[in-house]
Picture (cartoon, helix red, strand yellow):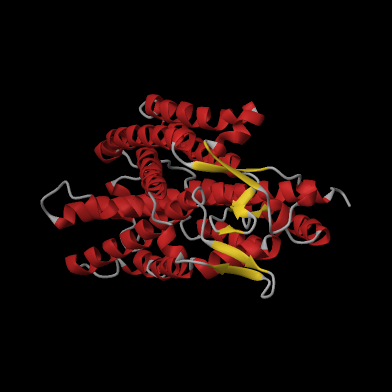
Length: 391
């Protein structure tokens, strides 16, 4: 074996985190644009607003569907690498995940059919369909991430060999911190979209989104600060007291206020992630006028930093449990130590995943560069020249 079992478990934790980051920074931008679209109503007439909406939509048109690759990889990796996590999440949160899936069905026809007819009602319908297909998934993803810090009400049944929920898992995702995370997720994708449109739209329209990005940057700074305060002084966090070799589905856990920052106390270098988030948000605000590209990448790095901050806080937990059993609160939690597939499975999947990840990343870079080769911004003349081929 190239790596020992514990190293493979950590490597796969990092790979899953990387996939989530790639999805959030690519598809997140697409979500943000389609959330904004129905509210692009500066002009009195729908036709003038429609031109601007089409320009915004076509900045993400070449790559929006390819960006969904990452969520497919993430789901497949959960099934193969952390099967207990896959079963626990999909069984307990089935209503939420089905809602995400059904809203995703609106995206392909929303992009392809929106501009096929000229009617105002037709185009408004698809604008709101694209809004729903973006707003609801981002909201649910944020709620689920925030709910992990409170835990889900499940335990491992030794007879059925699966997780069983002792309460309504979907209702348990609605907590103050989960709602905060949902609002942060929405604000992050909207900031990312504004800085993308500032980068890709020429003239006054791009300037409008540059100004709008200031609002979302400020909201993000505020929400990140509130979140850190809640993690430090309000929310009870779990600390594993066993060694990894002895862990099973009855993990010994201490629950203390501020426990989710325990990893940061053990490894101070982890503070680089939240600090980087603040720095990138401020840099995005400073550079968005003189260098739109740097501002956009600062936004992407801010999203990366906030996801890394959450992952560092939760590690090694994947899906914490708030069920109180014989082993105490949190003893049934799923961690990377007790949910990973066998050593041979992890190693074999690593070879395959590495090859495909390299291929996908190279292809994505080529796709982005090819889509914008020769012209970095869109304006109304592009829409006039490509009226029948643009979305």
